[in-house]
Length: 156
Length: 132
Image (cartoon, rainbow over all chains, first blue to last red; front, side, top):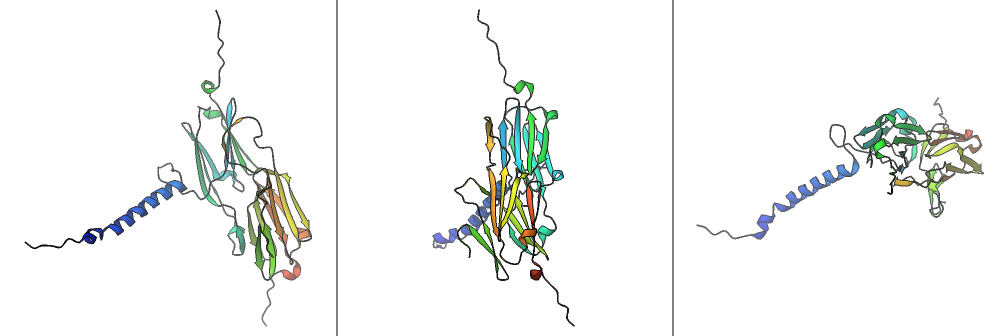
């Protein structure tokens, strides 16, 4: 039997690379969560930008307003799955916007996606959307059972 | 030269300034893209919620000012479940410098985007000189 001198640093030798890989994996997962939502097939989608949204609740309806300047109406898709409203689309760059002589680019391009869970049930077949002056407005009427009701109390 | 809140855009010795809105005022700096065409500069500004009637473009000597009023947002007394849209009005100033024909600026407003086409002065246009 031979005596092997214990070297504490020996065991640690494998640590840095393992930790490094783990850190990288965590960063990768958290980055993809931060940047995108999920696609229909469950895969993570990358969102290039996040349009600003206002949601208003009225007695009989919800109104969702989304700032989408320069986005074509045909490039926006609105879906409602159970109570989750999803707005996704793409802002395409025009030919001149890809030109070589670009001096300044501050506007956002690319795909976007936003999802919201509505607090009550809405009438799926009465949802109305209109796009004007760069703002998409979606009206979602509340379902009858979700509307506030007044119950008369009879006093005997 | 560029002061505070101004960004210089230098091209062939000319200075074009892009001034941002004063953060103290209730103005939003409209974000813009600037492209150079052979005979004009094209400026595109995002001004969602504004309208053709609400946008004004003024030129004073070589200072071009863009303003845009936003139509009544949800100023009603309703419950807001989410509030991210902050713009009340948009503002942006461009110092065009020499070489641009600002008086012949064309403006278009579509889908919340204001497109300004500022023609270059004739003697500033790119000219190809043929080699004999």
